[in-house]
Image (tube, rainbow, N blue to C red; front, side, top):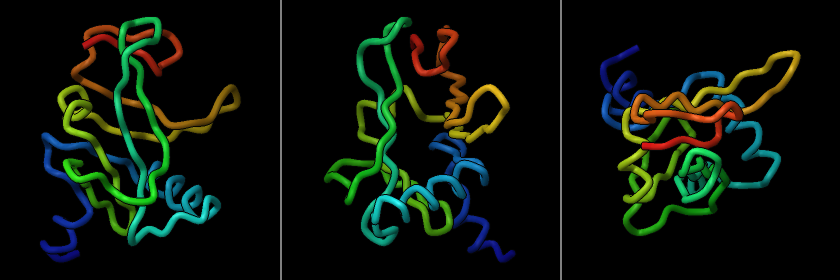
Length: 123
């Protein structure tokens, strides 16, 4: 892997990281949803609510918004709006599949406490 390739596949340390498992799952889901990787991507956000005060929001978007931060992982793009980025910088998005559950997992060092469901936190 060249330095250029290494830079292209990893976001800055203070940005958002996405594991290889999550990238593969995002790629598959985007294909199912008919979202073009060249234009669209996965939108990560934070909104008020949830049992700990803030909750993660994850969905597909057909294109980035004007002030979004865009993180590129191979052919997968991740969009984060400026307000959500305050809470999400340094976070890693993973995908886990166990006998009990499957889904995206937010590993967020900025969260001071989180709830048992893993989708709500306080900053």
